[in-house]
Image (cartoon, rainbow over all chains, first blue to last red; front, side, top):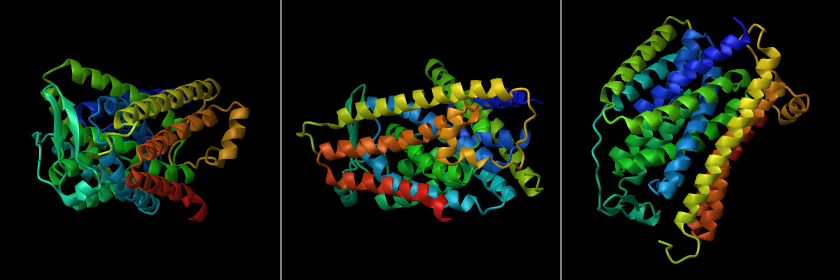
Length: 278
Length: 128
């Protein structure tokens, strides 16, 4: 196998990962790591480094569009980024000391949980109840809809902050965006409307990724030869995925199919981790 | 909230949207260009990506700059990746300026704190 073939295989795989990641809402990083480690036998640290770079690209690219629409709550994002970046730095440092097969098992487990989380029904909720801390931090916001501007309040700021620390830790440890966990924290704990929580989570992923990417970069775990096809492929796949989401109304069966793909990949990762092949 | 100030949240959203978009376009273009150079020069060699060690020239900034001068594909890719990592950081810097223009002192402090965390993180390699 030549460098050219190797690069093309990663490019096609990353494109697929970006597509699946965007259709399931899990993010491309999740799928590219098992692909690189199980099929191409790349050391998991390099796979994580490449994945981090790709999630920064997809998150920044789509955040650019969302921010302009005025749905993203930038203050909420900025405040919670304190938690996610602290978590991310700790996670990235930790990743340098954890044995690779152990990382594979953790990643597989988180992957299964997130895939199942992504299938949960999303209920739109608007909370009017006032929290003193949210008021003080100017976190309450509004967003435009077809029927005019909707105002919402943010509850349980402390609880959300703690979950964000954990989300950041996982992001730095495993090179994933942990978007599912971020959305869960804002949705279920802070009672932020779903549209706001998904766009704000996406907005935060880039900064969280950058905080741990600088650690990986300095340890030499971001390799240009691997990261190049991963970034290009994941970004292209994610862009194609968002086009499909806009154009097809019933993407229900598609989601199910890809969630099953993700579950198979995750169990492969756990199995390979346990028998020590990663 | 600060609705009466000249600089509004909507302006900030527009600026940040542009910072992110241009950052991604520029850095990915550099990565693609570097990738073409790399494949042109090394495409037919045999890859070794299990348990390998990245050369320090792709980690240290002066190594990367020297590599770009020598027209090394991988150094150009790495420069693009560094630009990509810098994009969200640049976004925080722009947010900080926007919050300052809105006279939102609390959020200037919060943004600076996030920047400080990333700065400390980027120094970690020199300490540990």
